[in-house]
Image (cartoon, rainbow over all chains, first blue to last red; front, top):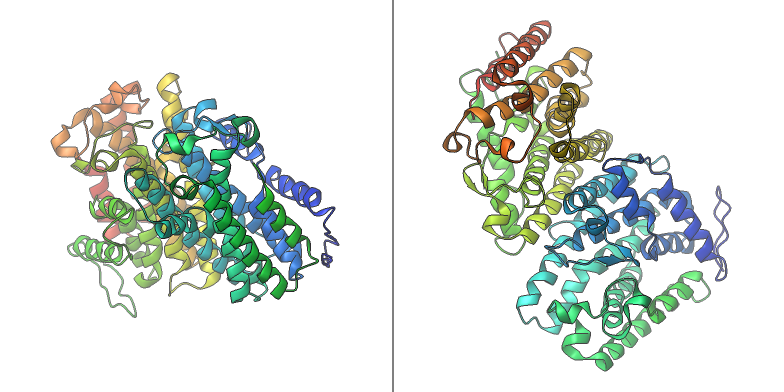
Length: 297
Length: 297
């Protein structure tokens, strides 16, 4: 069972957590002060096209698991989704992955234009940091710790390096280890930060949590890459089989579908082992992690 | 005369300030921990091609003018230059101003490629925030105040909105007031932040300083636009007369050279009046502001 939270009185369980958290996340995103025109219009477009909201859901479920008031994680969870949205907008650009479809809708540079996509992405990055800096429930020292960690996560040694390697690998032959390292940087780090940030706030971060976060993060990208080669465009909301065309080096493409499924199964076992050690067998976080491993879009 | 600084014992005067500050700025930039390869290589390229370093010089001179130890402003001054560099890298992109020359050298997307320019710019933005978050001389509350203000300065209501309007005006007929508002957002805000940040730290910000910062910031862009139409490529280190070609709406193009020179002269008089009120007639900041108004590149 989920934990209650003092001031917000939220009680999360396996049945209600997704709808409660979705509503909370979308409300926080709608509360970002944006105008209806100029550069705010494409920014709004990118934020209001809801994806799965995986990262903020993980942040809230982790907070709930360690009995941290969900209010304390509102700004960070929103910031993480805003940061993720910026990375998608830039990733979709013609000079990057050149995608025209995202979450079932035209990508930002298709709907508006390329310069608006560059600028909206840029603005989303500073907006993410601002959300944490302006938070009412965190003290200044918590804010600085989180901002520092978030900037490292998305910066030149983190997510950006991962994006760079992902593009570089189109023209090279990376080993499986190198591909997994790239997954770690490009995708896992920000997912890990979602789980780690509430633990930083309540000083409960340990190696079991770190390992769990890593297993969820790496397997998330691996499952994404498997979906790319196994599911049609209608299901996944973005152009299917795009990785082969663009010469991406993903494990399903270099090692095949069956071996990738086996690797995913191993990550799942390891993640479940950590959930057991962390005494979370009956917490909705376990249900959600299970859902993530079963997803087909 | 410049003020001495307790722990660093820097004494700035009209003769030495530029060489002392240039050395300090470039040393701080070299101290940013970057590797020699991958995405760090283009990041390094963009940072090591020194421009005029106007923004950090203004930050240090202001700190000196109010007797704030220069150490207290090191990370912010560096962060401002890093943030400015990110804006230039993205501004030069083919979908933005499409510039091939910057500070006399090929722009980043020409030297490397477009995706590296997008990613290097993205990484520079988070790096700028990280530099302040990691600073040793500021306390956490000063850091949060500065990070908040910097994110507002460069965000969707600030610099990015200015960049957006600058592009939008290529297809519209803005009034002079609208052009000056765009200058304010696109260029002046970050220059103003350079002057305002040391004043925030030592709690000496007042309306005279704000006005001075504004006059320097707005006129800086106006002088840039005048240089674009009056000076050759060899002098300015970027492609000359580019604004006419790209249908930019700049005051020298909408109002003519002579009227623009008159407006600049008015800003100079107003800036000097504020410097007088602030008792800075003998401070190197006055010499530097004078130099900025006289510049031809």
